Length: 436
Image (cartoon, rainbow, N blue to C red; front, side, top):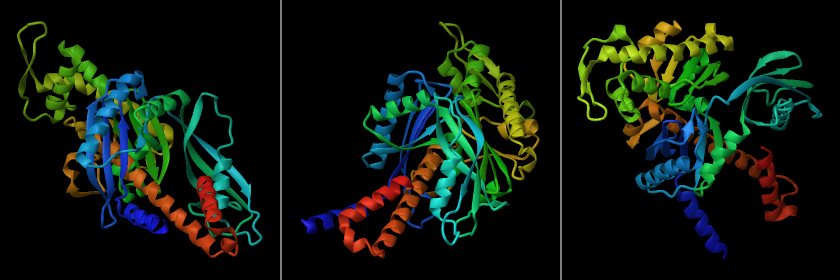
């Protein structure tokens, strides 16, 4: 029996570390299957699934059955392209129900040598959760901003330092409980397990921002189908998050109404001929739009279409600028802004954003992806969240394994290891991981 277990364990260790990012958006549902690269830098894209989404409104589930159908479709595609059975997923969440706030926590250091440990850090972060939260909301993320030890502020990593009093400032992201529960219901109804629920702009930042941008200050603007998500970084720490419900879906709707066509035609025209900045159009090409109800096709110009698209995108960037100013970090963005999401593929969007925001702007594409497997297929802003969710999941799994190794090694060297035996050891490791 022991030999069988050892053989089984060896087989399991040979399996690649697979993580699946599931981006459930208003206009699309996307699944990205990834594993760490052999070089240890970046990820390999093993499989992709993509389908239209018809069950969400402004990032929130509005029709469970339609959402489940879209998720089933992309999971089947992802399993087929990757050759792996999918059981666990890291899911993104957005919607204008997302809110954020700043909080504080304070504890005393009770160790005899006054040395701050990981346990103390966990305690002070937990203390920052102790504030009055409406009954219909849940905490999604608690992100430390800085630690203050005996009045000394600006500390990013307090472990190993000495002190008697430790404070923490945290950025807390919350969401509506029912919106979160409906995401769980849709995913679990098809037999999948959710390992993490991640705020989508935070996930996208893993894919499109580099450490230098995060250090000098950058605003990430992720324009999806139903929501526009904003995340601001400085000193490599996320400082501010915001979500508002004006995005690519409104652009498509404007085209539909302005040209008198159906929604699917409007989306295709936006994707194939759309331009967002009138001053940057070089060749004002003409193209045909289909007539409705047997009417003759109509010929329009790219500049005419741009006059429909540009006002709505200007409005989105004006909202984004207002949120950036509200954050208090508008003057700290040395790297300017990075635009990503499906709507970032509209031509001329960099020029328009730079004109409205008054700062350097670039379009963000998924990075940290090794050029093997299906890497070329995800080199588009529309895959930023899916790739970011996979990166987030792999990093979380890596941290869990490291914590497991630390606990195991510490316990094996402890005087009680022999006394407790393997069963007792497993119980202590499991308990410690749950607390972590």
